[in-house]
Amino acid sequence: MTAIPTLHTDFVIEREFSATPDEVFAAWADPDARMKWSNCHPDNTREHRLDFRVHGHEIYEATAANGDVERVDSFFFDIVEGQRIVFAYDIRFGSKRLSVSLVTVEFFPSKRGTRMAYSEQLAYLDGHEDRAERMRGTEEAFDRLQCIVE
Image 1: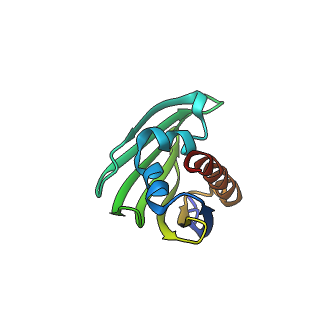
Image 2 (image 1 turned 90 degrees about the vertical axis):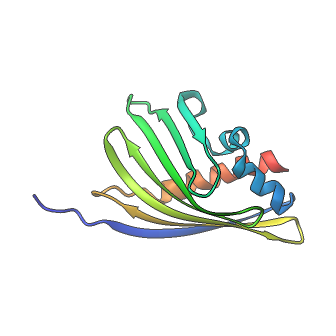
Image 3 (image 1 turned 90 degrees about the horizontal axis):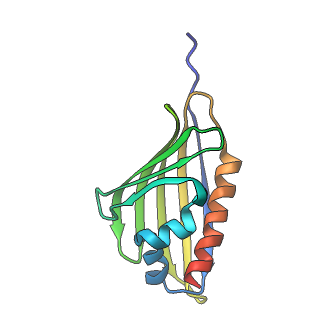
């Protein structure tokens, strides 16, 4: 059996919000707000649990169009209220793990209100690669986040 190499990549997205850093941070910490902006499958959600604390865990499951279950498990390593969140997550479809990511989100006061910097480092597994789609989905989530906080 030939091993398929792991593909490493990253991306950074910055956004400006008219809300304060504490208000934008709160939309990450509150389970209801988080589901309103981060959920890309609202009609197919099976489960969502958020334990937003250092060493806390977030679980999200949805049913894909083909019937497979998409599962995202996140683990929080560092949380500084109003300033920073560092977490890792993996994505699985059915029994196949597609990727593992390390994410840092930082919130900076700005003239407008808040500059949020989102940095994701990805390890794609077993030949999977969807960087452009992942970036587009993250941008769409941040569009929804903007609607929540402004």
